[in-house]
Length: 329
Image (tube, rainbow, N blue to C red; front, side, top):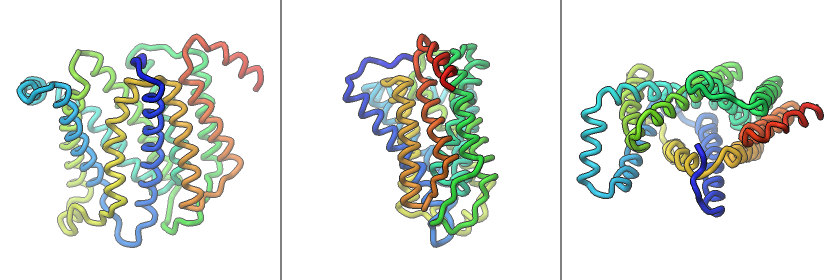
């Protein structure tokens, strides 16, 4: 999708906010899972609350788009309440996103924020493959080259995981990597599936979001019941919640919706810069907060991932760069 016309200042604003949200969410979530002195909060309730807030925000955006309460009511009745097939259709990405969001909590309980941020970029090749098979699109030679470069960078990062010195809880990097892998697969499939649904009709983005978040609320509350039901009843829904946990829920909610604005007004190159900048910020924060020790393999892998993200976002006509890069390497 081509970026709509917007001022440079607004694009820089979008880039800055997306970068800060992505980096801050990862670091803050890691902080809440590794530095708590009391009993841990239930991640399933946090995911549920995120869906509720997204629904409320989407309703607000749809209200603004409709311009009147009457149009809003008619739209919701016609396209949400009396459209069970559409709700069922959007329940697929809802379920997948619920799994993805829960896996983020598992991953960041076992991996440093910087390691997670780099490894999570595997969503790019996963999304690329889903795009090829589900939307019948093709990738340029440069994009395929960048995909393999990104995978190589992630392998370097995971080859000898960077150590942290200020985290006292027991961690399992293998479980963390498996959780990231599951999250990556979910992100790639759900993102492309949602795009396919969006482009299959002229239905408003915010209506589609409402349909998805309604399904998401049902899916995540079932997840709360099945995973932590007894403990939630015993200790309370908001057990272990702190201002930091509330901040994580807020970032997850706003970040999910803000992505739609970024896709509308910016291009792939800017999103690539944002992802690379988020990696850098997460690394700096991890060094300061968690005592992350930067290794040569981690630094090399992170640099490769940042370069590959940039190359992947270049226009297709720039594919001749792959020959130059291949010759240098």
